[in-house]
Image 1 (cartoon, helix red, strand yellow):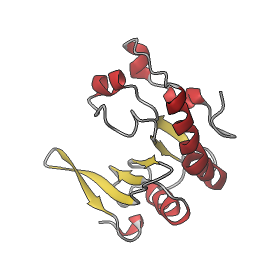
Image 2 (cartoon, one colour):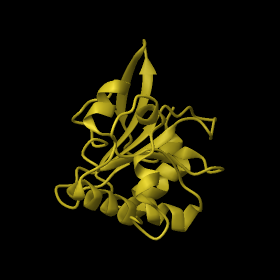
Image 3 (cartoon, one colour):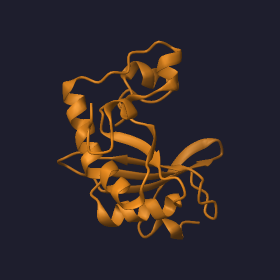
Image 4 (spheres, one colour):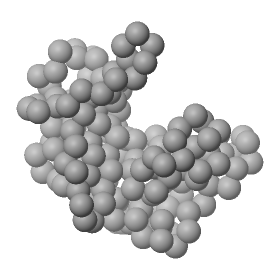
Length: 158
C-alpha cells in the first residue's frame, strides 16, 4: 500500500525488533490515515527536494514501544512521527530546510554533533491541527537525553 508517491506502508512500519520479538506492528485504519498525512506533508516534500529518504523508525505499536524502551504515548505510537535522514545531506541542513519550508508539529535534530554532518537523525512529526511548531536539538549530557530549543538555524548550534 502506498502512503504517498514514494512511500509505502511497509517502509513506515518496518522494525527488525518487531520481527525478532514477533510483535505485531500493523497500524489500524485511522493510524494509516495519519501516516499518509505524515508522508504527504513531511516525508514526500523532503524526498522531492533532497532525493532518497531513509526512514529508520516510523510507526511503533505500543508493544514495540515498550520493547525498545520508548513511551507508549510517543508520536511514533500515534502514527504521527518518523525518524529519518537523507544520505549525503548534513542533518543540520535537512533540519533547516524542513523548518523553513514545511509545517511540522515537532522537528528534532537528534544527537547531531556540529562538524559531523552524518551524525544523528531527524525526528519529524505532523498533525493537521494544533501544530506546536516545536524545534529542538536532542543531545546527551551526563548520560541523560536533554532537549534545547533551536530558535535560529540548526547549523548554528554549538
